[in-house]
Length: 374
Ligand code: NAD
Image 1 (cartoon, rainbow, N blue to C red):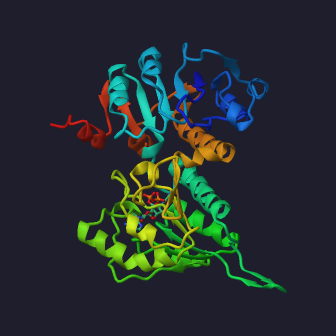
Image 2 (cartoon, helix red, strand yellow):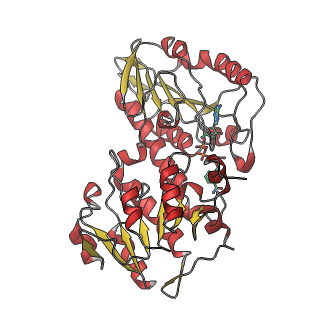
Image 3 (tube, rainbow, N blue to C red):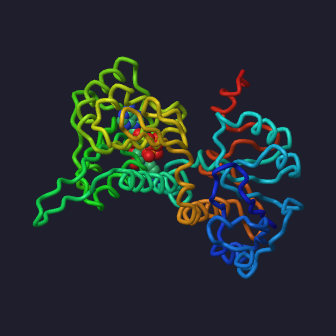
């Protein structure tokens, strides 16, 4: 069996799906590896390093492969070249990738989406959503610390005391908790809010203060948040407004699975912040938590810097790739038995992560999105 690792082609994507370090493990499992030239160029993994680890490096790696590993979804022309039954594994946000999903079905390709790996204990080693959110949360705090024209920690010097920066984090999932931990390590005073009840304890355990507001929690299925009603949304913004106005740094990470990110902060709330304050919207590329944030752009709005995240994990491509490569290899090895591809759809992880197989779209919510249920 042979797998191919692609050079990423989407603008701004600097990660790679596999590093030379994982190749011996794959060879041992009976899997040969072809790596597209320059695939690891952005993370300091040279073609020579992949060859030395036992991979074949080539300009064209799509001939006679059983599986294709990438970070971003393959493109339509790559899908056209793969033969029936080939497996693809990548992030595959099906809501945004309708034409590709249809092409994968038409070509009878078996596709798995890293976005759909379930959040169970057994699936943790394959959970790329978490690993990449962790990278994004760290990066968000570092961006804010770097952009803020003041210290994060308190300084007590003979010339006087400098107060620490006040950081407010909205949304305390994987990214938010990492942003909190990073801001705390840098010495900031951190407050955070999340609609899930369990987050209060997690926030406190990192040395931050949970922002108490007079609103019921909004827990949904599988430990995720639920979407807010318009009424609650307005009330939450009103209650959080004074906390936002008092923050030097606001980092937002809130999202609800399968929905556009909730609008937590209006333009008026940003305008009420002190000049020089910094807003980092890590949800900017999912619709945005902050009015006016633009993915991949840094804007000055009424003297406040508003930084919109765009593929933020990719801004730290080496550690993001290391973690992603572990996640994808762990998922892929669930499909390998005695050196052959063996797809056991009784395995809950493979069943949940599969998008297309044998000429069908197997992921029901995707079928619904494409208007094909019925
Ligand atoms: P996410 O990216 O879907 O959302 C980020 C955060 O935004 C969540 O904490 C969510 O509650 C919050 N949020 C949503 N709407 C909000 C609003 N209106 N105001 C404030 N906050 C809002 O979440 P995630 O980081 O993927 O994690 C979600 C949950 O899954 C957490 O409970 C996490 O601990 C859990 N999780 C479990 C596992 C596992 O068991 N293997 C792995 C990863 C995450």
